[in-house]
Image 1 (tube, rainbow, N blue to C red):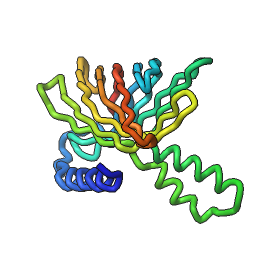
Image 2 (cartoon, helix red, strand yellow):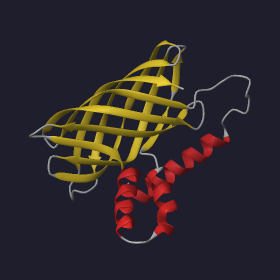
Image 3 (tube, rainbow, N blue to C red):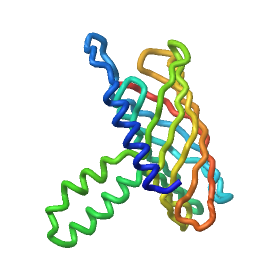
Image 4 (tube, rainbow, N blue to C red):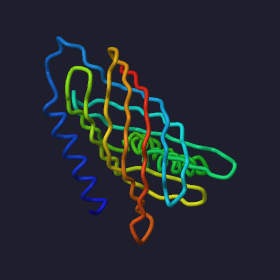
Length: 195
């Protein structure tokens, strides 16, 4: 599937979801979820644990935009994961600081706001949601190699208390840079707080 098709599908899902968002303001809905946790990645036969920070912005009750940062900075294995928009925006920002192209500042800011992907929350009961996700706009730096990545997987949101959740997840990652398909796997646990 080409990058253009993935982008168009993501845009359509977001457009449809925002048109179906509830207009009833009598019940407070949480718009932001911040999660911290641990991710174990197996990428190109390299295994590494990473600290993970995720920000989710809910565009409706069931759909959220995902921004995820992860990293492991050991002396022999360096793994970094970030949204592609953030990496691209910071790269352009560093170039614009070298010259006087301030007209691009707003475009750089918009680029940095592009999410990595979309999560869809499917209620199972009052305390649990099943959350399939698609994240086509990731960026990974693995040891001495980097690539634009996409991932698809499943999270479970377990809420033992209001607005506090445990989120085990597992997913498959594909690296777009390589000529033949290169896959990786992620598994982990996040602790989330909704605001």
